[in-house]
Length: 243
Image 1 (cartoon, helix red, strand yellow):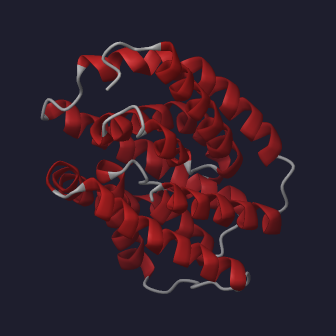
Image 2 (image 1 turned 90 degrees about the horizontal axis):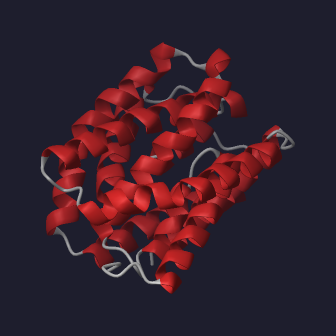
C-alpha cells in the first residue's frame, strides 16, 4: 500500500485529510473520519499513527486558543486513564482482526449519538465523578491506539456532563493532544512507525492547516445547542465510517 505513491492514492489521501481537518476544526474532534477513506490506501497502523500526528498538530493550536477555559483538575483523570488504555489498544491493533473490531466500535458510537440526538437535554451531571472520567479516558486510550478515534469517548462524555461548548473543547482537546502524543511515543518505541508513514506526514500538512482554519471559522458561529447537534452528527458519521 502506497509503495509507489501513485497520483490517485495521493489525491485521495490529501482530499480526505482536508475534509477531516475541516470537521475537526468545526467540532474539535472526529478527525478519524479520514480513516474511512485512508483505509483504502493505508494499513490500519499507518492510519492510526497519521491520525494521531495530525490531531496533535491541529488540536495544539485549538487548545491554545481555548487556554482560558482549561481546568487542570478536570484533565488528569482522563490523562491517567488514557495512559493505561494505550498499551491495550496497541495490542488490539496488532492482534485482533480490524474489521469486526472497528464495526463494533462504530455501532456503539452510532447508538450513543442517536440517543443523544433523541434526548437533547440528557446529561449525567457529576455522575461517577473522577472515576467515570478516568474510565472514559481509558476507553479513549484504547480507541486512540487501536483506531485513531481516541477523542470520541471524552468528547461524548464532556457533552453528557453538560459543560458549555468552550469548556468541553478545553477538556477533550488537551486530552487528545496528550493521549495521541503517548500513542506516537508507544508506537515509536515498539518500532511501529515506518518510512512510508514519515514520508506521508508532511504531504498532508497543507491540507490539515487549510481545513482546520476553515473549520475554526465556522465553529465561532455556532450556538451551544447547534454545537452539540453538529458534534453528535459528526461523531455518528465517524462511527458509520468504521464500517
